[in-house]
Amino acid sequence: MSCVRCNENKTIKAHLIPQVFCKEVQVGKGHAAAVKEDGSFHFSQSGTFDKGILCADCDGILGQLEEYAARILKSIRENSKGLSFGPKIMDDVDKEKIARFCAGILWKYSITQEQYGKINLYGFQDDVRRIAYSEMDIPEWFDVALFRLRTHVQDDGVFAYRAPLIDRKNRVRLYRFMLGGCLFFVKIHRKKMRDDVLTKLWLSFEDSFRFCIAPAEMFEEYKIVRDLSFNSDKLSSFLDKQDEIARLKT
Image 1 (cartoon, rainbow, N blue to C red):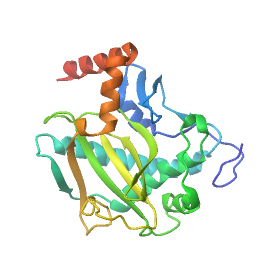
Image 2: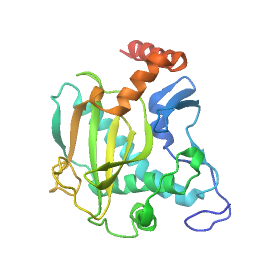
Image 3: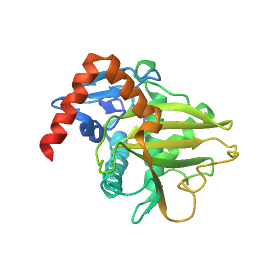
Image 4: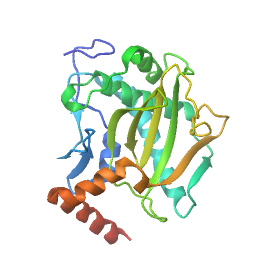
């Protein structure tokens, strides 16, 4: 296998969900990942990776964006404690890096194997790669909206992560994924969304970086974990360990 981007012969274990985010939902040496649309999950020590898609250099470029995004999402969680629900503004955030980070996540999932949750970017795959690697300006058809899913008013934690999947709204194709306690909606479509409730949350809106604090229980990412916790003894035990660790830290 050679690198999909540069054809380098030697590829590495490229993490699809960056390891920095995997560690945030880790208990001991394991963590749970909801990957499929049915909410199925597995335990892993290092997250899901593909050994045949990227070389160290190409993976490292995306890794710099991932480290930056992880710092921003941690700051979002910490600064959201005690605040009311609704849109918020945060200063000193490089919106372009966040957009390119999202492009990198989606592109990796478009070149991986079906068993790892491969997604279809349709005719946009090459351009999404170019966005991720700063080889082109961010076009109008690519945009990002971000929600901080909070389980209670003082919540600054992470309850799960979720790999990308397609989610269409008003005939416009979006991709959703959750990392760092935040839910991303990424628009990759040339059509404009009618009655767009996300208008003021898109990164392209004005200059400030915006996100929305929302109750986790309103979103399927939380509902899936909640329902599985009642129906799966394995996951229930995992969540109990998370709660115990959280109590010991406070």
